[in-house]
Amino acid sequence: MALLQIAEPGQSTKPHEHKYAAGIDLGTTNSLIATVRSGVAETLADLEGNHLLPSIVHYAKDGTISVGYSAKIFQCSDAENTISSVKRLMGRGLADVQAIKEFTANQLTASGIGMPAIQIFDEIKNPVEISSEILKVLAERAEKALGVPDGDKLGGVVITVPAYFDDAQRQATKDAAQLAGLNVLRLLNEPTAAAVAYGLDTGNEGIHAIYDLGGGTFDISVLRLEKGVYEVLATGGDSALGGDDFDRAIAGLLVAKANVDAEDRQAYQMAMLKAREVKEALTDSDIIDVHFMNWDGQVNRSDIDELMAPIIDKTLLACRRTIKDAGLKPAEIKEIVMVGGSTRVPLVQEKVGQYFKQEPLTSIDPDRVVAIGAAIQADILIGNKSNDQLLLLDVLPLSLGVETMGGLVEKIIPRNTPIPIARAQEFTTFKDGQTAMAIHVVQGERELVDDCRSLARFELRGIPPMVAGAARIKVTYQVDADGLLNVSALEASSGVQAEIQVKPSYGLTDSQVTEMLKSSIDKAEEDMQQRMLREEQVEASRVVEAVRAALEDNGQALLSEEEFEAIESSLKQLEIIAQGTDIEAIKAAIKVVDTNSQEFASRRMDASIAKALVGSEVDEI
Ligand code: ADP
Ligand code: MG
Image 1 (cartoon, rainbow, N blue to C red):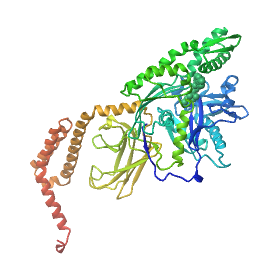
Image 2: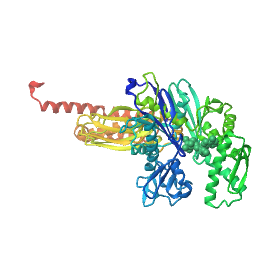
Image 3: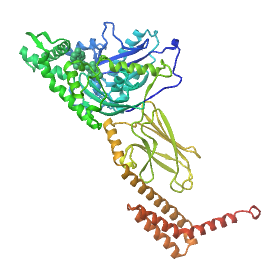
Image 4: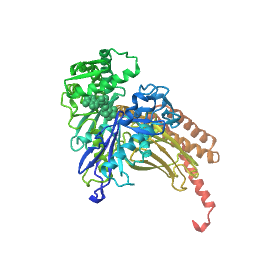
């Protein structure tokens, strides 16, 4: 989703009104919370000094819930009741996640809220509940660190989500926050947060790539900052590629050295934990001593580099694909931002630098950079900054429109409009006596409904019967700050109304959005032609409709049989021609009907005047 910078008026607050806000990076492997204090954004540590909170939740039989490092210790001993990587389940369907390796098949069950859930003893925990436990611990940490008075709460939080998260996944994240008692100021895309942390949003126009290699996921995002608009040009990556793969490769090495059975689950778990230690230690040293099971020896950085190189190459392949998707070349990337704990690996930095032919930005701790960006945004959103501070705002990624006659799209809110926004447009009835109107909400840039994405349909009923074109139906599109769309329709004279809530980007990935935009540009001319044709066809059917109604009304009385037949046959002719694609021919056929029915129209006029005269007193005339 693209973002726009604006200055929000009236946001400056006096010091004593300082509100507590925080940014939260709710990660697959680790989560963090950060806040702005004395103008500096920093992540907050727990009592032991740990900034990272492992995204792990353990449910004990007695009902005790532990989160983070205290849950991690149960990972081997009580694996069934220890949940990690819950982010992978958020907003997904059971069928989507069946293949995810972190969860054993018997752990996952239906939650009743559409998402898969996890069986814990005789209870079922859904991903929203599990995530909320992580959020609660982070919020408590922030409240303590900030000295929020007892009984008081954090004023608001910004939570980051991957750029490719769809509406269901975003909604699930918001629900988790709500369950944790948090006020979500906004969800922010992780790559955007990282760019904000480096201050790339302040005056660094151009294209930036965010390379995010975490524990179990790799995300590459290409953003363009132009005239204050942050736009996601493309996202890519691999949802099953990350530091864990380094660990697996290194664990293989350890298992071989110690000569243990790789099939032994417990031994393998221990090898994985050791592997991670080895990997992280070799980030700072070239060689280390290792003790694993009955093996004592040394491991070199070059030993593990060899194991990690093919995995890193896979990430670069994904980079190439994504940059190509965005229609760019690596040389066009102005800055490359490193995010995620795994980008600490020296070989990752080296290979990324080689690929992009520039030094990647690494000065901010790659674990913390997303939380820091989120904290900066939260501080602005809560109103702790003066007027001149810039605020990132979401903009609509695709236009929202309504279907009009002939299957055409009338755009109500064009793409890249900052949200929240409300826009209204008036429509009218097509037929005499029409009492209902179907409203079809669509999203996309193309001229025809068939080429756009259908979001919702609803009906406005109970319109009082009037002649065609007399009813005034106001259709209002309202999009809130989180991108949720509400459409309402109101008939002015009678006050009847109907409305519906839709999620405009539901299920659309950023690359689908890009694809839709691309095709609207490619097809612009063809679309214009189509639109003209449809418009002429609509006009044709309007003429047929109106003249037929008139014929029925008093055609028999006012016309001779031949006259009646002549009009009727020109109508039939028009109906046939209107089914074709020759715009000029349709225009000509409409003209024929016009000419043929001119005399009839004037007789009708006379007749209606006569009728009016009959009904009025002589001195009124
Ligand atoms: P996520 O975004 O998935 O929550 P993180 O960004 O916290 O994940 O990254 C976690 C990964 O970073 C783990 O695989 C961890 O081993 C790795 N990591 C953390 N510190 C280092 C280090 N010093 N050297 C190498 N890898 C590291
Ligand atoms: Mg992360």
